[in-house]
Amino acid sequence: MAKKEKRFETVYTQDGFTNTAAILVDRQTGVNYLFYQSGNAGGLTPLLNREGKPIITTVSTMDD
Image 1 (cartoon, one colour):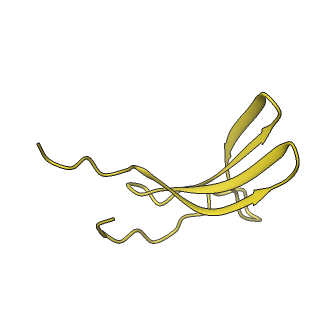
Image 2 (cartoon, rainbow, N blue to C red; image 1 turned 60 degrees about the vertical axis):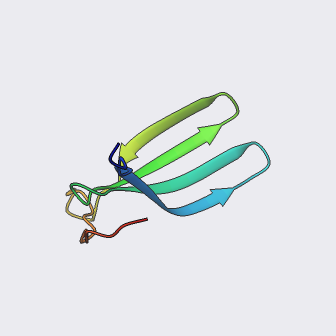
C-alpha cells in the first residue's frame, strides 16, 4: 500500500496553560492557517496579509 502524504504541516506552535495556537500550511496550496484552541473550543482561519489576501508559503515536494 502506498504511503499517504499528510496534507497539512504544522510550522509553529505556542502552548499556554489552557490554550494552544498553531500555524498550519496546506502542502497542496501553500495557504497558511491559524488554529487556536482554548479549553474545549477551537477555531481555524486563514492568515491574511495587510491587503487581506491569504499568506502563501512556497510548497516543495518533500518526503517525511
